[in-house]
Image (cartoon, each protein chain N blue to C red):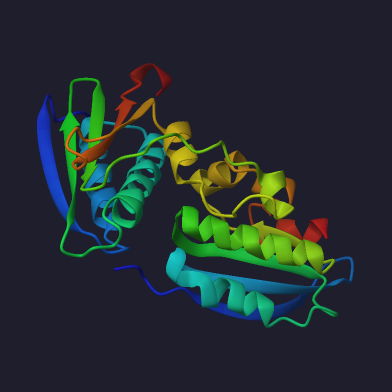
Length: 148
Length: 119
């Protein structure tokens, strides 16, 4: 049962690997309160974790003086998550990962985070900060009651 | 913040009589898991460990860096003529492994019994 109508939850993470799990757990708690199915909660957890890892590693370049902001906005039928860092944002989207190319050494085994984010949530957009900072990724996952 | 990855190696025999090396992981599989994942795999004798089974039963969290370690292992295994299979993934991580294409190079099974029966 959903106990939330609209609510905003904010978390601020140090730019240290592993702290993405704090955002992941928070997002999962909010999604469960909203009534998301367990499989969608798991999708959200991975997407939020990967967005935070990108922010920590690429946006803030592991600079522990910088923090990653995570803003969860619960609506009536969707949950929006913004993950904000102090990087410049991305100039272009990376290519879709290709397992065959990876297995043949033609592509880095890494580089699947953005693909997973896009595949696991309903909407994902990357926005570069206008001042060369405060870039963010916005994720949106819908509460699909019909599928329950 | 990330829970340490533990790993151990077991030797078992499949119902068909094949020797199988089982790598059992516990904890998170992330960028900090290189020694536990790749290091443990690389310590296996390549000439005798021809069938390798990965046990994810006690793994709760795998991120893209952890998936990359698994892919690196699969690359090395393919180059060494080893076959790799996995079991114990949650429904979510079974979906994720399928999405990124790992299932093309490593068969996934629900549990050890099913995996060994197929070898």
